[in-house]
Length: 631
Image 1 (cartoon, helix red, strand yellow):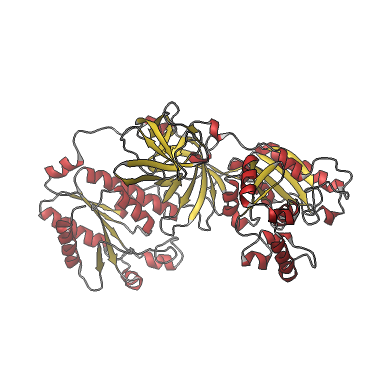
Image 2: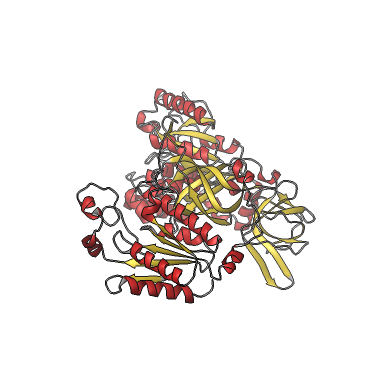
């Protein structure tokens, strides 16, 4: 198709024609500078998808910013960010549409740099097929293998190997066959299907759309032929119905529907459905869209379902086929790709987002990390940037899920740092842990409210935090003495005392500090269930961990008390001589010296120990406790 033809065809005609063609979503991936963007630009150019005016602009940009001298630099068609054009690299994922007479395509150009791995995973997560581009001069590199393995992880099991820049190795058959053999062996080890290997030149167009006269020794299909004949992924419409509810649509009292994207399956009015996790059943009465009601809807469509019964359903629930429910669990094994410069904090709470569900989750120490070169399983205490590991995780409430291999939408998740709100990891659920189903909450007839009422008090946690030597234990002792004098039931959990028993196995690394706070928080929660006022005195240096404990408690029961003492004053006091040892290098990971302390941003109580005596501080804290508003 010529460029002029593209300009004179009516848009509606193009859309209608493309809808009749089978759609294939694929990505180009591989190491940096292997020519992925140039290849996509060549595909767009040779398919006639570039209008005349854009082609003219490309010629101007190629002279000004290109890397091919006077020739067209096809990479500029895809690399749209200024930083990409200046550096000649791909940073963000770029999606482009093109079609041929046989098929329509959506291609994602993924960055090759290791630091942009998260962008590559984003592109691969919706792809049916991957075109792995390899520079003939360098062969298979570590990043090439990483991208191939990541594709396999996120469910892309079909690949085409495109050995690019053959013009720079004199179109050598030996070079091509060596690279193809290397990758064929690796593909077999990671369990992907290699649809074919093609020697190409994205810049010159050799074996992209048409067979190359420069490589007469190659008599296989062109890249386009392989793309046109490739079969897309599994037929999601044939699977069981799964619709994660994104929004409850209630514009007036006469209409109530549940909107979302159908992740899998087919739905029709009259179908029996069951809501997860509640298990309530109903029937579909209507399928509503902006264009009117539908007789049926399939995977990939965004619709609003109206149900025959008035049942409780909200964002995060999943509407499923009545006879084929997804799983529900709060503990899982998952494969995790870590994408943040700060390593995984084992035991730290992260937000976990899966489909439309958001829960708090903690990740345990990895079972192993994977060496993408050798595929060996290596021991690890945490996950660093771009590490791929397998670990167990637990959520604060049950999650509706399916294994990622069964359903990408209900099996894939991201982890989000609670403080920075950065996406730090992508994960794929392997399976729910059996103990999550075997261990259930035992219903107790005596409630926490009844226990507190018996003591004629409201349960609470007074969480003292501050530097070592700030006076936490001193003030906490005075507070407990005052509560005892008032006839109240309390208990003091002192950090040093707990390390003689409950936490004796923990050190002072960041991971151990996180676990220390988690354990104390769990004990404090149990004690508030008994109706007690719990006083904790421990440094608890990280805001995220204190917030995790706060989230364990009912609203209003967690009272954060910042014992605010300047580091210089705490070091001057140094009753235990710990600061001196830390300065001398005898104690590692000491808060305030070589480990950070994150002061509370908005504590319920702040005690300035430079202005307030311990006795006055205790009185202030008790007054707040007795007069605090209800949660």
